[in-house]
Image (tube, rainbow, N blue to C red):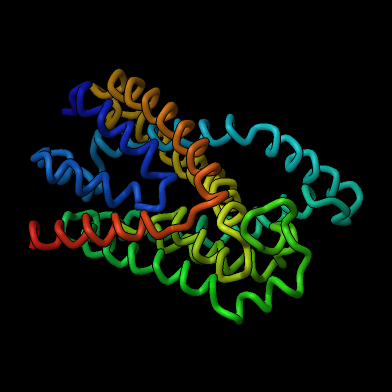
Length: 296
């Protein structure tokens, strides 16, 4: 059974690492393993367990924090979506963004329904998470390297630029639907414990000429419906017998997850205005490498 202290620690961990490009799923495996919480680790790879019902609520709380932070933008996007249903045209950046998010959400959503359970039971183990976290670090380094390539600069040169930015990049609303689908497909990698959802989608955005700020913003907007839908899809686990005995811990953990997620997204949006993925890449390589040695 999860204690209230464990619920708080895991809640904060979820709220931070879901948005930082360091993998929440990977950390939810590694941190309990390092702390000796073996019951928590083993529960993650089970078909059903109270811990998985607990995690459902943490995901819902994280998604709600993202909705609150981007509430003005989501209001414009939702309004734009319904307007396109009437006009059958894309006339504004918000209307285009609504459909970019829809087509980018479909690949990961469908794959998650089909494979999430199998991949979690197979790879939600400390050594596997450590290996994938190290791969995540290499992926982040690759993203920053590709962003500086001449081939990406040519993409930027052929599109309208994002205004008033320290880093040159194309406007987010200039992505075409094939590029949005490619970013959405990249999200599938986050089904492996250790691969970051925000990290892999940011890298995909960077390769298409977005600057780090817009790549992060698109990643956070894209993560919101996926995380919320995944949580609501598994909500019956929490309401049912698997939720018995952990509902109080889940509420406490969710409150901490929501606060941590809100603070994290606020920090990261500002961070990526002037910084890149390098600090997170180094962190993943160091922690992943040490964890491989420890759990091998």
